[in-house]
Image (cartoon, rainbow over all chains, first blue to last red; front, side, top):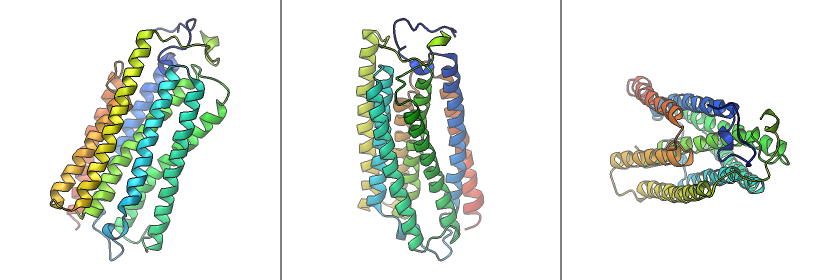
Length: 206
Length: 114
């Protein structure tokens, strides 16, 4: 691990890991993500254990609508791709392009969050309160935890975009944008399992 | 070195070879994205068509989800690249740990109670 970076030729090809700090953040962030995997596993396990305990309240098959979940999935998948494009632009030192794609990622995330809020409001109208049944509590905890991650991610990228609006790509902010993109992909992975395990299995009547 | 942490660069230090490599990777990532969209369609159709027995459909869509997990981790999050040994170590151990967690929770609070 060399302490010095050759900056004379321009932005290094991997700016996110050019400094010791960047390298440490990179490993540290993967440790964090691995912890997140385990945490989400406990929420998934709880939901799978309790999903039949509807206590006379609304059931999964009555509530979930495929078109809405499908649109949300497509939005989040696309936002994952746009953040990939942004990071590729970052590696090539194309700051404006990176900013543009990060903003697109941000707005796709906002759209996703809007749908999720709309969805929760609808379910409450159908009589599925947080404490209606074991199914309701575990559903809101799992999907709500994912939603909270989306909120956090949106706040994160918004702060980065505002703070580094004119900074250009530097060895300080490149790791930050890169970690955000890892986080965003992770949120997408979790959503893939939520739409499979929660929504499709709920509709499929497993 | 320390004084070049918060200044932008005028150009990229990428060699032609590295630029080619990045472009090739981008193309692979687009293909991975197309696969993810296709897998998502397949999962929704499998459930929406209601032709196969639920037991089969559920194992099928969970299998599709694991393919998507693999594509995201290895292609979008670059786990397949070099210098990702520790990242792989941590991620794989997290995934391995989560399987007994989920199974145990289903058995303890699900099967036993209902």
